[in-house]
Image (cartoon, rainbow, N blue to C red; front, top):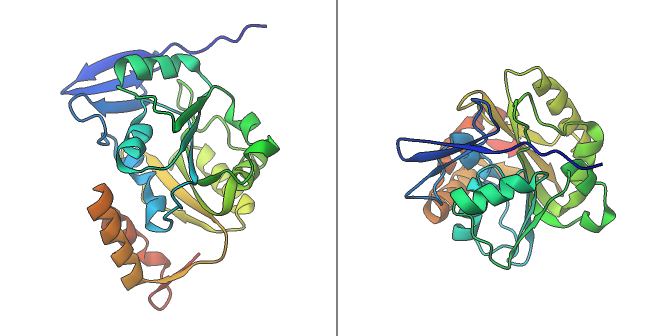
Length: 251
């Protein structure tokens, strides 16, 4: 039986090009004259794992859901890591190449597969030092993969020390279910960042030895991330202050 894929549609306004699936919901965006810069705040927040993790040069960054290619273009410009993208819809990849200036260097591998099936395969276990999960359909009614088994697969797909970032909708009915399943799969080691944009809320989940880091160390690392990547990392760290106990963040 042939698979029917959602057909991407493109719109443009104010120097920004948008990706949709035939609805008003934005699936991704790009500054036409600055393609490697983030338009949507949550896509920048998906990189917040950089505050906690500096992968070895040869370690792979994983991304579920290509969207308009924002995170891929950013990673290609600002890092030298291999990139592995899992995108269910090959028409999205074609749209990114035609309309969203997606390059295809040898270190970028795009697999057209269901992310839930991808994490079930033992060949992918331990592959990614960081995994960015942003998988929505045209109706944007919560992530299309959100079961406990899926997040357990994400955990297995991370290296011995790794971080997952997930885009959720904080006000959506799916939020509590996702938080419960992520927390169970990652043994309660999660951080929830503030809700931004049109309700997007990014969650970080950690694998590896427990982390105990003081506020000065966090801010110092945030300054490095800001200077190297141009990301608002100190803002992210300030949002974590409520998790500190006696000046220490424990995850």
